[in-house]
Length: 237
Image 1 (cartoon, rainbow, N blue to C red):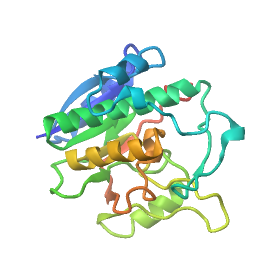
Image 2: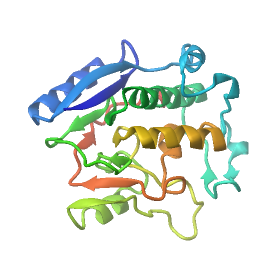
Image 3: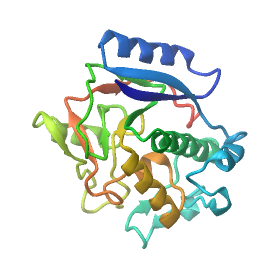
């Protein structure tokens, strides 16, 4: 059985969580899932202090929180754009939530699936072979930018493949990663590399730092295991 963590803000989106857990049962997936308390703007400072894999005294958010901070990051070669959220602290809190799950993966020293409450399983998950690092499980449609191009490329064959290049040559080189952060499988060794990257470049949104620009061998799978339910995001509310 594979552990899975369902990141959920306490008291919110309970119907989505129920649909997610039911989809795991209905697909007879080899998953042991538990709901994981999400960080919020009110709890994220203490949550960072409680982490062992991350020294909160080195806390450094390194992503635009206003349009005038947007631009090309010379260290990584990606173009950073502010996330469209009513409260940028929610973007930070979401990243902290994922970081705390990564720490759990390291502590337990075994792979696990990271899920947001809007994920939904569409086929049986039986596990991943060792050595893949991190694998995106989600259908990109409705979950990420240029999703049609992403899907057209992914659906050409049934196998594991590297994250596609979806940026056009004449556009800003924003990070190219998984199909959002709603569902991905991760090994402890990859989680450790993520914390090393955070120490190097600072904290980014979770679905930005897990990108092919930072991790060239980042993978996705087709057919997909999950899709998004289409509920309103708690980050962009």
